[in-house]
Every structure is written in C-alpha cells, then in structure tokens.
Image (cartoon, rainbow, N blue to C red; front, side, top):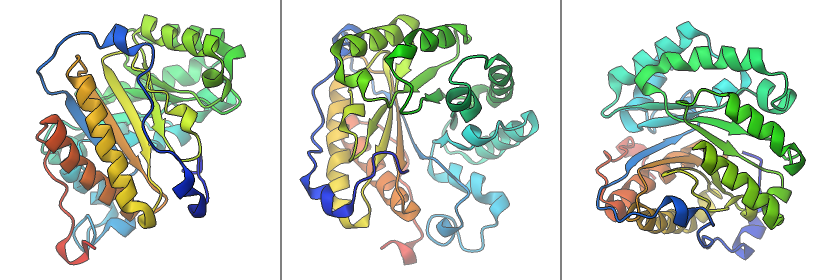
Length: 305
C-alpha cells in the first residue's frame, strides 16, 4: 500500500498514539456490555507464492491458496473486486473453497470496483453497481461488509453525491466508506456532517492507521461495528507495530464494554510475510485483551523467524 507511506528514517518521529474517540462514539456505544464482540482478522490477498513454506505447506499449488488461507484467517479484505468484478461463478467457487476449509465462519469483505468509486466517482454508476451487487450477493452467509474507498480528490464538495449513492444501495447491505481527502477531517463542519450522515444511514466509516496520514485515523464509530485497516512499517519496526496493535486491542476493549458488536481488522504490509506476522500477533493480542477465542495462526515451524 502506497497511501500514507513514509521513508523508514521518518518512522521514529511519528506519533502513533491512538487519538481520542470521535464525536459519534458516545451516541453509538452507550450501553454496558459484557458480551465479546465478533472478531474478524485477515489480510488483503491470498494468492501469494511467498507464503508457500511460510504459512502454506510446501508444494501447495495456487489452486489451493484460498482453502489454505481460510485455515488460518476468518476474513479477507477482497481488494481483487476493486480491479475486476468477479463473475457469479467465481464468487460461488471462492465461497465454497473458503467455507469448506474454514475453522469458523469465513467472511469476504469485497471492495467496490474502481470504475464506481474512482472513474465515475459515484455518478452514473448504476450499471456497474448492479453488476457488483449481483456478484457479491452470491457469497451468501460468507458476505461481510462491502468496502467503498474514495480517492484523495473526492472532497466535501461531493457530500451530496456520496449521500445519494449510499442511499441508493440496498438497506440490508453492510457498507463501510474510507475517505481520504484531507478536508473531510481538517474542517470540523464537514467532519461532523459526513460522520452524522454515516450514522443516519447505519453505515460504517473505515478507520485507517497508517504512518503518513494520521488524519484518517479519525476514531469515529458510526455503527456498533468497526472496520480497521492497519498498515505496518516493515520488519525493522516490527516490535513497534506489535505495540500499536496492542494499543488497538485496549481501545477496542473499551468499545466492546460499551456495546461494540463486530470488529473487522485487516493487516497490510509491503512485505507480505510481515503481514502474516502482524496478523499472528493480532490474534494473540485480541484473544488476551478482548476475551475472544480465535484460533492462533500457525506458521511453518522451520521458517518462523
């Protein structure tokens, strides 16, 4: 992921402390709760040959990458849908492969295609949207939230366009939106308007934790679910990234105690081996702090460095 990337020498100067809660949180998370939230942890890809002999058994063939992935993770941030809408047949195949090998219920969280979000910028995108929805609905019970990522240039002057598009979607579709234009966060009025919009529509707001754009770490919880994209800083900063994950576990615990029901936590790294290490730590940290019982991610022993 290039968004928010900084030079390694600049990482130590960045304040990675999680900000205070957003304004919507007290409205949404306002009930004493003793139940454990449903936790979904994953990465953005499964078709990674470098995971063979590291996460996947030696000699695993590409056709078996998804079933092997589903043995270790219970969700996937499906970025593949951003570049090409998968066919209904492909979706059915993926769903069957994952469900057949998952230890727990597995969720696909497909990203809206770029033709909708970036090329058409949500206008005149009815045909592509219908095609996307007809495809992902075939995931059935394996369909998690759909993830709408807007470009850096999509700013508050397009608020009405965003509102119209979200209102046009099926009411039972779980949608989280990631905003990247700085003005959404720097102007208190725009910030208030857009997060109140999400709350009113019962839609979520993606929270992105990345070194070079701390403003997108907005901490606004607009529904009792959170979709967090965590971007690590590489093997040289592994221990620091582990500490960041532990801080997330503590913050999510406070939200869980106030009524948070679901957590979708996706790990990103330029080094995909490091993504797995971060995910393995996330499972351990969340189990310890949140009381979840997610099966630990087992790496191939000889290569667990």
